[in-house]
Image (cartoon, rainbow, N blue to C red):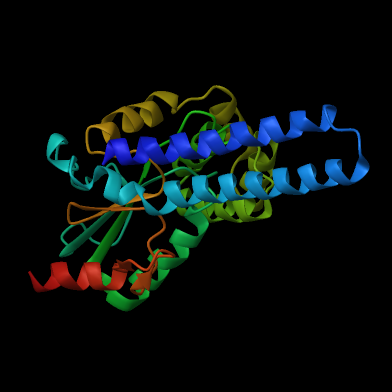
Length: 257
């Protein structure tokens, strides 16, 4: 399956090479109409390559690693020092590994809100950190939410960060504005964030999560069953026609076990 993924990435890369060759052709042909034709063809191939790359990442990630989960450890259950909502003895534990600047996490958070409304005290939901390299705002955001937790407002800051994400205004200075808006002690928060007080905790969760097979965000675990991506509440159909199981039915299965 990994080879299939690599082949698809190779194809996408090859398409980008073709784009480069087509652009180079502009310097060989001087006629205006030929240039316009080459540019149009280049744009078409570039768009197709980008869409293929998105499709591979969004829809094939689960299949790609489905056969390798035996190599990973079971996810660590929710503990008292986790950030969680609900009761620890709830029959359904949902553990979410995510990054606040991931473009898919605000939508998945809306799914989780539906889950809490539907299942009530039957679920407990915990948040843990996972950050990919290149996510420039992710660490400052993670530090911000931990510093807010220090003052008892983890979830309020979480909501602010998701709103910032959707508005595309992520940044350390923005997070300080958020802190003021939710009533945090500004001096205490700013000192905590600037000194990166909780960096070790965040990095520890990232390293630990790799043992559980977390490779991207969001990744959730429902009573230990891994679900990759922003899985919707209801069952759905992938763009290639494959059926997908929504969070509602995943949880229901576990309740009936």
